[in-house]
Amino acid sequence: MECAAVSSPAPAPESPPLPLPLPPARLVQVLGERPSPVVGWLANRVMDAVCALPASWKDGLARFVGWLAFTLGIRLRVALENLTHAYPDMSDAERRRIAHGAYVTMARVVLESIDEKDHVDTHWEIPEVKGEAWEALKANIAKGQGALLVTAHFGNWERAGKMLLRRGIPLNALVRPLKGALNMRIVDNRIGAGAGLIYPKGAIAEAQEAVKLGETVLMLLDQSLPAKAAVFVPFFGRPASTTPAMAVVAQRTGAPVFVVMGIRDESGRKLRLEVEGPITVPEGLGEQDAITAHTAAVTAVLEKYVRRYPDQWLWLHRRWKVQPPAEAPSAPQG
Image (cartoon, rainbow, N blue to C red; front, side):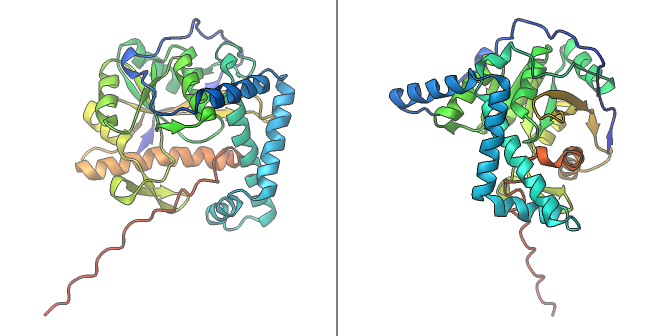
């Protein structure tokens, strides 16, 4: 397993291309449950008011909401259990510090992702990435060839996608149907930024089509799945159920796989984009072994970033709740 290159931030800013792209017409259907018109209107006016706040006020609000959720213990037991398994030698105080940071990160993601103006206001961006991985991805797209992109619930994955779109990468995101005013606003913002939406039903075929058309497909590879739909790969030393979709599409299309991460700076208010890849697996493996090995290789890259910036990952998710089914005991001999 190898990663060809890692990109690094450029020392000077470059202006991303404008205007924003239009999403593929075939992938703009919004699945999910919208609120009633009255509830939706009221909720959107509240979100508009929040988005109109100065950046420093919004960041203060995110810190407060994160602190409040942490103090109230919302899913705190899950976060601390995950951190205990991941960092058995770490002090309780340090684990709690990381958990608190994860709550603040999630609050920031929500407040940032409901903001419709962030498509054109780039005060939150750190200069464009450079390096062989980023150049390889751009070259692939320039030749009309598609690619598979992988990220995690880390930093701000929504804005990472927008940063790619603003830099000329045609992007479609593998998403789930959502409900509620806040979630539907985020979905609308994805389309407004130029992203196509691919839903789980028929996702493999849609992803293959997108790649053949020279587009990219972005997948989050850090969510637990039912055992029958997953492959199990190491993540922080424990088997984690993971979607094989990325590896299946890569195997069928030959598309390169890149990891893309939207990483916060020390202030937490600005993001930079890092790209790593293409990530490959050794040749000579059987089909299923190759799928598992490729998924493991990409997951190892995600783990590297989480270890580097642990307070930017979603420790609140029960990532290891599904474990491999126990093997049936061998039949007695004789």
